[in-house]
Length: 187
Image (cartoon, rainbow, N blue to C red; front, side, top):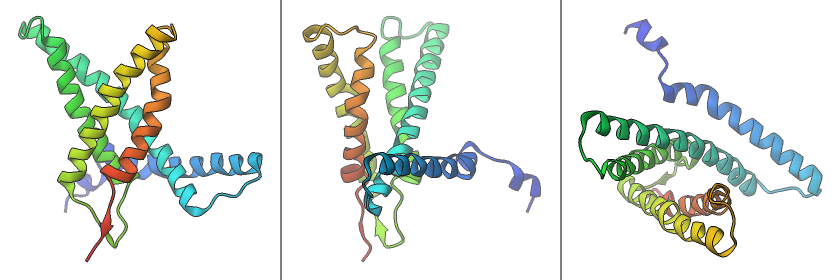
């Protein structure tokens, strides 16, 4: 086997070697601080969920960056080639949604909602459920909340998307944890 191949590090390997090993201890430090401030000890299940939530947020942050890059590159490519005039931004939106949710699914499946040795889950079912959950929170719910913040409460259009994140991220975490990535016991 070629040793130079072994030394090459993919983005996934780098994240596995460095990213999650940093994320978990940092999440636990924050959790210990919260326990000291509130003077309440959390059980292992809640600690696990908190660490998962931190990892989910890291995946979400990377997903936001990837989404923007995919959208921008697609849009620039369509405009550079002079195709899909008038619809290029919509097609770029579809491309970024499909690929960024796939990105999110991969990392959430591999690092956030990992299976135990005695668990199993259907790849296709969890992938479809992931697309459904992101469609609900990212398209439907965010649009309704945006209208509510801007038209009803008269909050700035620039602040409203940030408020959406305060609702959609925790909700998406719960939907993904208990529905999209739900596992069952192996037989």
